[in-house]
Image 1 (cartoon, rainbow, N blue to C red):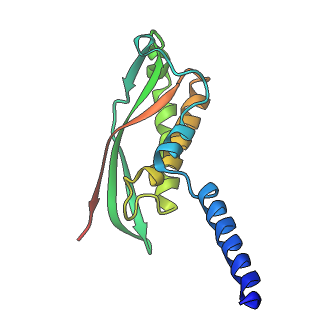
Image 2: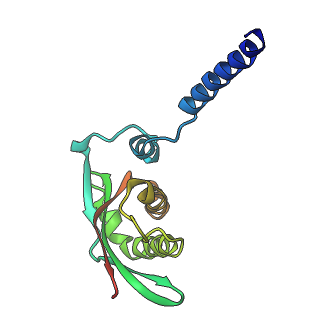
Image 3: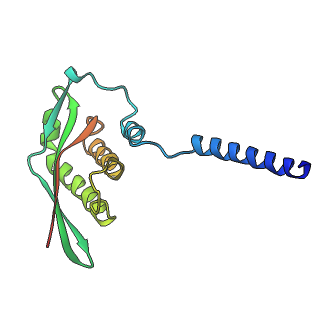
Length: 155
């Protein structure tokens, strides 16, 4: 019995340590990841912002083996301080170009395959869109909203 006591105690200690480590090192939930993706600046007062819908939808082909297997269409809006929508309109062609590059990169990396609307799959896309909007609009944009997204698979 004494010979079994030490291995049993070590096994219990190992299980407790492993369980504790697993609890503290578990993956983030999608809510925590969404919060992390949000800009670190103070949340805007919603009465002080406006949303500028970009005039065209973005249509992105999804390729496999050099063949179009599906097409993704999405609409985007930019959140800006009230009175700054004219900046978005003036730079819309540059925004569209920057967003198309991000969307093509996302498609080419497999971001629109499978469960593409899952928040963990959209997180890198949202981050990249916000980063590009801030670069083009000189940090006027506080967020980019994906207002529509649909994928049409080819038969």
